[in-house]
View (cartoon, rainbow, N blue to C red):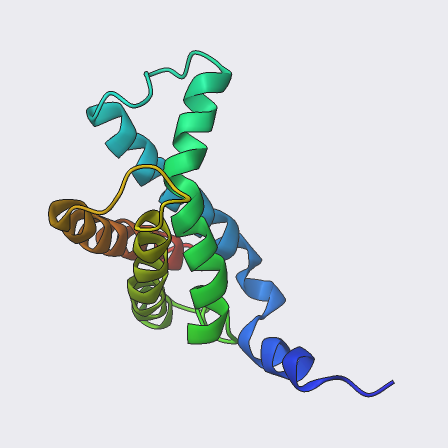
Length: 143
């Protein structure tokens, strides 16, 4: 059976060797959002139950959706992404910018509570880029 254009596109954009990066990226995104929700009193530290988990998920989900859409398209997990920090860091940052934009657009809809203040948008772009960049740099030191 012939593969579709989508299959071949994703095959060129996602390399199995980058799976540890994908897991780390998702954990980093949730972690920096978690820190923000703690600072704003949305969740407690340590989390005290299902309500904290739901609150964190509500804030993180739009950005995780953005990441899952943008990262493969930009090439965050393409062949070579896991080979060095020099390759990995720029791919993560270039992926985060549209991922955060998607997350902010989702948050701006009436479907998601929270809205989008300009300061929140700036923090998401900057802190997300720095967090993913630092994680990818550290991960690149162990390749």
